Image (tube, rainbow over all chains, first blue to last red; front, side, top):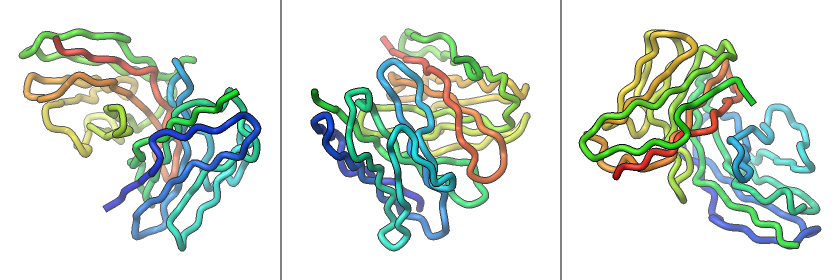
Length: 109
Length: 113
């Protein structure tokens, strides 16, 4: 069965510190992985996706198939990065997403 | 904003009553989804539809029903059979095909009194 885990419910870092939000998945095929973000009082929106291999707002994520991980990283956290972050998996040929439980990132001044 | 709208923003219901949540999109997307968002549990898929007049159960469909009579609309009915309906409900849509991004609505918070 497909599953996405995010081990940290809450992650607090100071402004300017590096941040890493962990995501692990279980899936037998080759899924596409996404990170979605939900800022306070805003709707859930796509942050980045593996297939695009792009950096959005300074965030990057590398797919490690050996470790089945897709951790989200940013070298220098900003206060505006404070939000809820969800890792999601989309299996081959399907549109159904499996979301992780989410990690709340709090960037302290 | 725009694209996907959900109404109402807040909804209160008495126990034993059915209630319908609205979801409309003008993105010309074929696929639409309903999720339930609970603290600490992330988003759980209730129902999804990849084409008009067709829909499938997600992981937690019990106590819910949907219809897809129009491409733009995918209403969700929370029935009295749903044991714990108080939650935040999110609607999403996407193009069909592989690995397409889902676009989300603003959500409806349902509270059962």
